[in-house]
Image 1 (cartoon, rainbow, N blue to C red):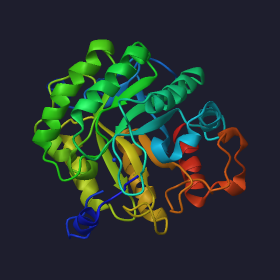
Image 2: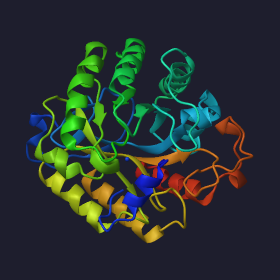
Image 3: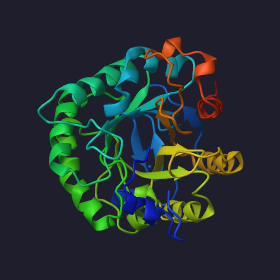
Length: 336
């Protein structure tokens, strides 16, 4: 979820509302295809769809883990097992914080194995539980050098695994698409060296809102998805219009982060707007990751502070209303 500076918060109050393809991806939508709930099959992107090895459209749905620096206690095998068995998820997301921000006090350090070890723990657990997992470089800033180092280590370990999807820049803030594109053009070859066929998620400007800018000038790589983030009580039709434009231009999208509350991750759940967004995702066969497995005192953190580290031990009383709505959505979309 978002941790914002005072300047960022000011920007969020502006009237402009905001919300987390290679040239070959600009082709028109292919013929109608059946949507399948993912098993662990190698994935690839064709047109604007995520497909499995049989050519069936794949829709992934599950919750994202929180920033690893503050909520690393939930980065364990029991949590991943619970998300698969009790929540019905076929995907989760390891949010590896690239830098400190706001109340995020611990971040990736190239001289420490902490971040890599936590990421590896949940990736190994996802593989053991036949799930997909997004290895997310959870950054708001351009941190290219550390990103290169991190993804080199991770792809050396997991480059051959069909379970792992790589997300290279969580949410670029007030950063133009050309800078994001230049960043991606340098980082994607680093990932492709060890993971030549893995799917990679590319962030888009203004907290992953301006997907239409990416659609107008996509990257020249195969097997890319572009991230669209929304928080339903803030981001409504204006954001969907930009997404619709990108979809019409053939850009393959993924909702790699979202919530049912406001853009700060707090306030009341807006059920009506949430349902409109999920209907939009269903219509366009978009994968959806919901923010987040954490115990912070805010609406988007799905757990109460007394929730155990091990997700298999969570009780119903320790799941906040957003967790229960997320569970309901996951099970419905994944046919559970």
